[in-house]
Image 1 (spheres, one colour):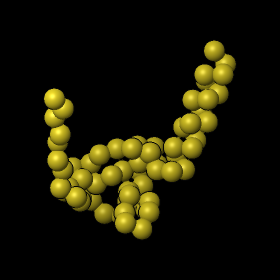
Image 2: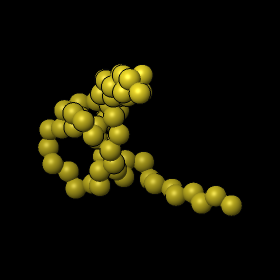
Image 3: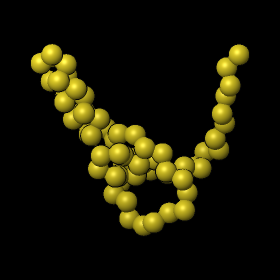
Length: 62
């Protein structure tokens, strides 16, 4: 049986682990102010593309 953890919407700030932009309803924006919500990290679209390219180069060299 799988456990499911439910998180209310807007409970976390989603932040890019590379450039630190914050995901908003309108896209990714630079962090402007401090917040008191917990932070979850991921990649924004542009940093994800760069990371994928780096991984592909590493894998192809091995």
